[in-house]
Amino acid sequence: KLVFLADTSTQASQYGDVSPTPVDSIFPRAYIWSNAANMLLTGALVTLAPYGLTIVIVVLLSALLVLSAWRLATLWFSAAALGILVMYAGLAFGAFAVGGYLLPVLPVLMPLVVLYLFSSVYRYAQLEHYEGVLEGSLQSYLSPRLMAQIRTDPDILKLGGARKRITVLFSDIVEFTAFSDQADPEEVQDVLETYFADAAKAIFSQDGIIDKYMGDGILTFFENDGDNITSAARAVDCALQMQAQAQELDQFYRSQNRSPF
Image 1: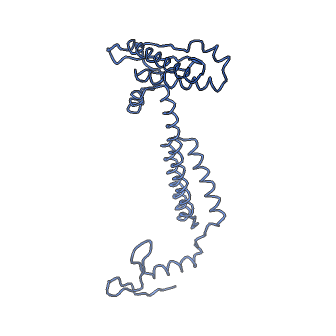
Image 2 (image 1 turned 90 degrees about the horizontal axis):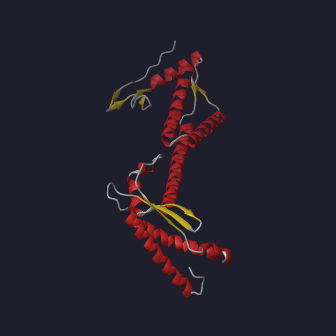
């Protein structure tokens, strides 16, 4: 038999053979020596996981985390990442408690946490970029007032739409086909970009919605706010503004000795 004798005093004025441990801030070291002796006598030694196994575990769990980031939505990805971390922590605890096999914890969990943070930041940046591109596209078709409404209530864009009374405005450029046949492609593009930019300002000033650009034509519609039927008047005002802008553009082109608009 082995007998361990030690001073286990824990008074502040005279500490015995004690030290801080993960179990307690003041722990008798005799317990540590007795436990070590018992492990030697019974052969219940702690087995450290090989370094190569740590690398394999990190690679496999990282691949699983990346796959989750790629395939799952943000909320489910966060849940999957937390599940992976908890699963491995439980596996490491069970391996040590049952078989005395010491799996690395921090060397595995820390890279996974860093990878999760990086993936989350990347997903957020991608989402911001996508929303920016989408908003930029919508701004080419919707007025600033409608864009503000969509930011406040995104459900406006829900599929299925709603049945409303609207006014539709079709517009195109007179003799544009003949002009495009004889003009350079660069000049045609410049004319269209300038005209569309001016036309969009007129449309948005009347809260119109551009449905599509059709060659040199624009299909626009105007909605009504509740029972206040103003769409037809706004469509006519928009058409008059577009004609006035076309005349100004024609005068500008003539002043530069370019083809009349």
